[in-house]
Length: 269
Image 1 (spheres, rainbow, N blue to C red):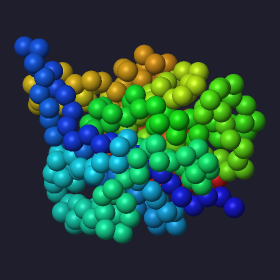
Image 2: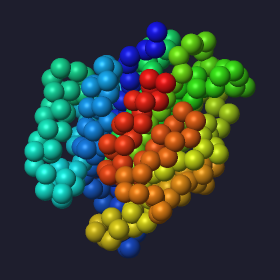
Image 3: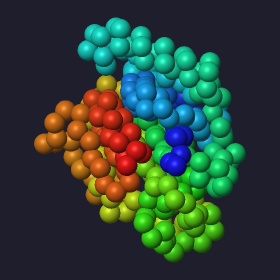
Image 4: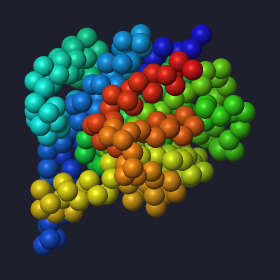
């Protein structure tokens, strides 16, 4: 029987850096993007999956203040209230307020999870892309997708024996977390080299830079430089997603609904 648990990865960061033209750096408030967490989360719960939240050190995550604007919801106040209520429910009845530290999730326990999901917001820029324990966790899901189970690694990157395929979902700035596989113990390098991925684009980030008056680290070009094949949102319908092997990825909040649906389908395959 397939595992009915999904691991949701969050950042401990509450701010992200913006480098001003004079060389100074300011910190802007951030966290997870509300709808990018809530929409896929609701689909997972509706499909009968249990979820566990985890972050680098187990700090209480924050909501990106920009994601609470009604502009994000095109004025749909009821939808915003539903998603805010879901987050509050996860804080009171699950462990969203106190995520598991990555280091507390042993390799053996990872076998109990069917998939892993990383929502967006600018917070992942700060602490997910270089975290060795997150790299170890993501290697588990990456390796167990391969039918032969063959992957010539050493140390904790070696694939355990499982009968359950694993799926990975990332959205917006969340795909930056995939870079952590370069820092996993015994890592042979970036696990997603050659994968087709979609993320928050450099063009979209430049629009944010104009609002913030400075430079922000880029997700799309960083992943491309690491060896991913980045699929632009240009030419995709609004909210379009990209699927390559065990990974489904999306660019922005408009992709959250479709990404959640596709993720559940992959988990159930």
